[in-house]
Length: 321
Image (tube, rainbow, N blue to C red; front, side, top):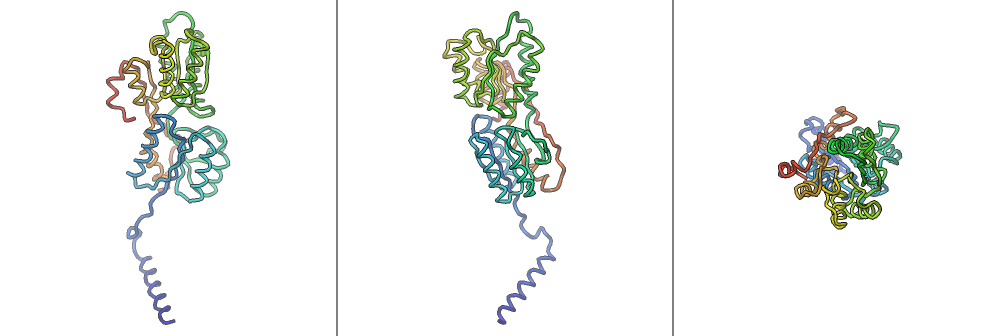
């Protein structure tokens, strides 16, 4: 009994001493970020994942990472798992725009702030997330449209365009289509004659382009691909059909990955609109700011350029992805 009382006194003394010590005397608890990634569908996404993982390490943030393999139900499952684990912040790049209300309300009820990266969600209640950081996809589509209309302004007759769309219902697919059409509709000679999803993958881009070529053949003047990987797949299909990409068919794509620069240097791709995947440092800063109680802007836009094939060789050594 005496021993128990003595142990209790020591414990009370230690507790009282602890309350007198400054907080810095104790090891600071690591911030925990739960990140639900779309998948690994492209070079762009691989670079995006690498940026997030390396930036978390550098920032001293514990990262819980999941790969949804391009399935919304997998992302929702991962987010619910992060809520159950009581992480400090949840971030994710949504596979599609709709269908997130329920799980985001669960995160809000658990008082876990949510950051959207790269892609946004379609929700009436924008208090369900803190900020959306990433590219302006509509502007990327506009850039592609402006480049095309300028390049072909003196061309007589119709300009027949085939379009390889990204994943159905995803923000980049919706916005890149919208921005491009907004620009080309000013001149009736530009016509999209075929438009189909290639799911942002090289294999599907090749498969769909083969179908376009079978259906339309030499009528096709322009290919507009919503990302470089689909464009690279489509270039293979164009070559296999005995045509010259970037000459017989003008090829426009979006992302600005190394593979696109290699295709431009080889004279097979005309232009790539940049969409930077290197969001890791910005995301880690946002996580720290949120936990420090700072107010973040609702929209954080990344700065990006446009690279026609003429500058590809000069720019290639600067590419980080």
